[in-house]
View 1 (tube, helix red, strand yellow):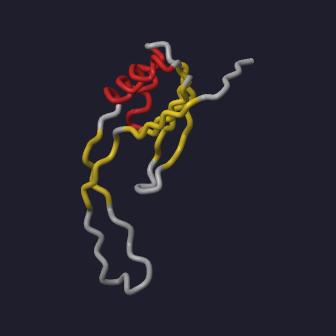
View 2 (spheres, rainbow, N blue to C red; view 1 turned 45 degrees about the vertical axis):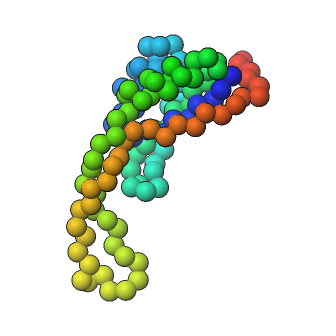
View 3 (cartoon, helix red, strand yellow; view 1 turned 135 degrees about the vertical axis):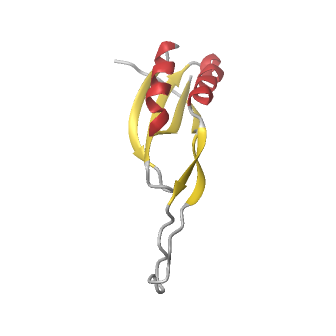
Length: 109
């Protein structure tokens, strides 16, 4: 058995949740926030049999697309911020970060 933890952007979370439940995956959805852009993320915890891991990864990949987004950079710490003009920077957001962990024991009550 495996525990999959998938961190996805909020924009993709409902679509992914629907796709996973359509394929009979049991999913726990947790609100989380990212450290880089400090924007909302969703973390999915998915417990599944070893043979279904590839299917779950395929579903996640199909439903969590990366895209370009303009963000305003954070002002510099220290120094004179009066002359600092934050120009938007284009960064890639979205997609998914997935961890697949072995489960030593599983109990359901």
